[in-house]
Image (cartoon, rainbow, N blue to C red; front, top):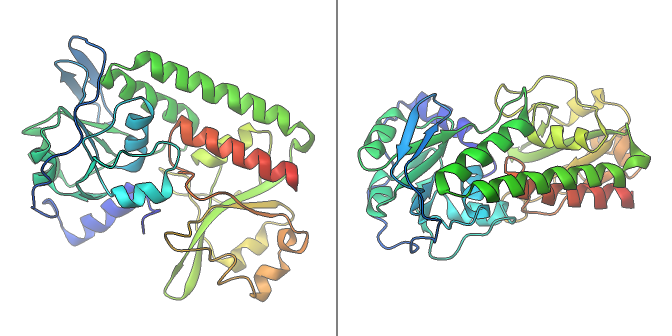
Length: 327
């Protein structure tokens, strides 16, 4: 599923015992190096706790997860390669890729040969990749890992990722400005929703699996959950989520445990469609839920990457404020 973050894909790979790269065809070509400020040696400590030294700020970057791709693009450097560029185009509208960016394979199982052919001076990954693939990549380029999420402090982790990648690119000022813009938009959104302070919400996505609709409610430990509570609302989904992204798991019957709330959701017509409208539209349990009966269901626009960076989160704040103020 394109909407699933890298850590889920990694678990699948681990179960299959995969330790090598995916395809082996070289990518060739790629985007020209992006202009970046001149600078000397850059030393970083990444999510693995490893110190990574770059001889200069990176300009030829390959990104292996969509949040990393968004960070790099939004900070003003177009990567030469990225994982699953078609999926990224569907799900991440805040920081579009140039057509020259080469696809280096699926997230979680990139083609090491394709990455090597692009001659990157930096590879940015999220969470875990097969160790064999990482070792191969480190033979020709520095690899920096950033966390995909952090349930204890999701907004803080997003900011730290922005700062780390900004430093790697020599874009420290741009990273600081981006974080400040996000903080200002969140504060503005809270003011715009002051009349709804404390309003209960559920935010979820959903997909069809084996003929059944699987629903992922986002907890307070998720980035979207934290941003929405930052707007002054109260998360009505209190059951635990996963340890990295703060995602719960339920079916339509599980939603009956929530009670009154506004239901916000995101899906994608280009990838999976809208199971809440299509598969659940005539479902008796769905129709019985308080937010359906009171018409408090809002689908947010396609292409807001809910695991993204400050620019995606600003796009989310815009959409959430618009939806809630029209309710």
